[in-house]
Length: 193
Image 1 (cartoon, helix red, strand yellow):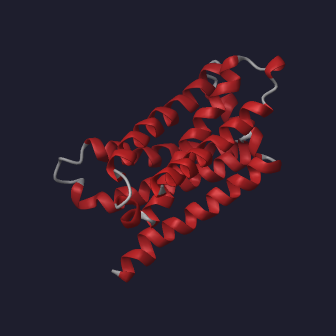
Image 2 (cartoon, helix red, strand yellow):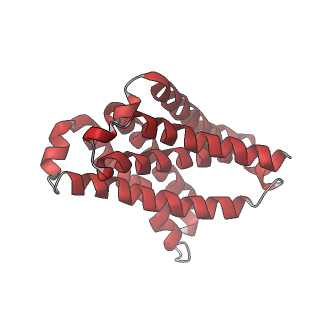
């Protein structure tokens, strides 16, 4: 029963922003690509939020389901989503990077910095068998988490669904709890050991 509730809660956390976006899309004035490109950003962020939250409860969660399986497969979905989200935007903008940047320089700067930091996790995971990376895995996780936080602030400034209403409140909740979870996981939790 507990496992089912965890899966239900995680599914709702991921689906709520996506469904809200789909409901809010102006389908008459949007191309399919314009309508779906934000979904990849929402999906990546909510799954990253689940990772941040699961770090707080990792020991408890490991007793209830295959935690490593969850992290492995959601990490793959996150990686594809964080590649497809900006790629679709580039295609929509006909690869006019300067035009994209000028639309909201502060938000785009956060994305340009946050994305490579976020990708350090995936690069580090691929190279984890090399000597350098296992010894620095916690630093890689921290760098990736900083990228995640920068992407949070990016999304708050530029995501059309995130400017008001239910989804903005939910996003702020996700961001604040992710930051608190990060402080706990990489700070307080380590001090308590």
